[in-house]
Length: 473
Length: 101
Image (cartoon, rainbow over all chains, first blue to last red; front, side, top):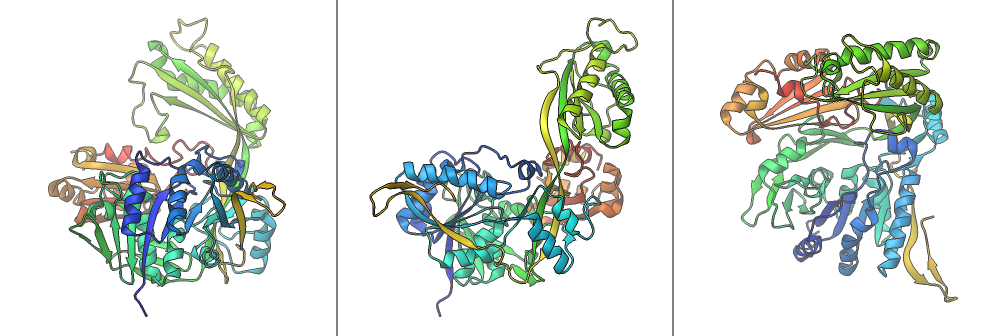
């Protein structure tokens, strides 16, 4: 049996690529590439995209095009997760755009699509019949044991699928695999594990590759990164000569957005990088060895957005020194008057209100040590979350009026206390969500819930001679 | 000496929606040693700085290879708080950075 060797070109698909990316991609292919892999989902943005069904307009299809062209030219598969929050609605928007870009570019692709949205009923049924579904974080807002009702209360649910459903899809031999929400490292582990790379090394390589060029020096996810993976080690190189991997850049990247510097819990096990040793090579690469994988029961992280209300905000600019000197007292007084006017709504938790003063405590809130505005101007942001948009608007308007005309000691600004830069003065922001579900779902079969469907993308001619443009689904 | 003055990079970010992690990189062995000997960069010191219980500090780790420290703690204002002022957790290093070593 030959030793496994697998080479991956990685990037981040929701970030527009760096200048000269075609040249960097070709350099990577000159070293050899067996798969092109890029993540495009994440919870960094909080629960809003997941709950609202909206997403960052990031032009994902255009970002991936140079990579897809190269993968096709060289006959290797690509693996992408699409849509930030990664629900069906997000994935479909990306796939529709991908279809348009493929057709315009003359590409003709068979793609295995894996959806990772769960219905509330599906999750409720698993909670009823399966082992306990426990929180993935120690936050007191998360239910200690998920109940079927929690699943039914969620607006939208996604699972961070592991490498296994992608491994199955890859075996079908399509041009590429595109998923909704997925575990970032699973995208990279899947093709390497199919090639026989042990899970510990595959996961270690995936950790380094998951943010594209971010693990290089200088770090920039607009750049791509290349790795060669074998039975024992991963070797990383930068296809862009203006960046390079260093021992420090790779160790630091292990820290990035991770709670623990060396260990990470994943579906089916914990990746342990405590004993990894990196060596800088003469050709500009860095090799890492020593990753371990400690098996654990298989669980998938489920993210669920729960609607909590509607937000309205109002912005006021303050420049008058006498008011700046008492800005907090003035806005606290306006809040008190507004709460009194809507006392029932506040008592019933149908509304909540805060004011941030940028220039004083807008960033740190109660952690701020400064007690007065020290600069020459400040902005007050009235922030209301209420059970309806109308109520949020009304409360925001009341707070605005009190701030605008409310008296304060030493007031000279009797025609109006502040500048109003926006009309409407109360801006309806829309729905507010929280992660009501951030829990680990035990699974015996990592694939059963997440089958792949092979779909055609691009322009093709049927036997009847009509041109089909197959939009997603 | 403020931590800010000893460190080359102090970066704060979420590690998932409910955890904050702060990575601190030092240029010199002196700065690294001084920080490592400080009370500030201990679970108690971090908890006091942020006004949170010590048991919500998940750890303080040190890596000599890259002269780095890592601090992780439970977010006191997370996605469950509609008035969370820093969704990415990208600016919550300031109380630590502005503290004396």
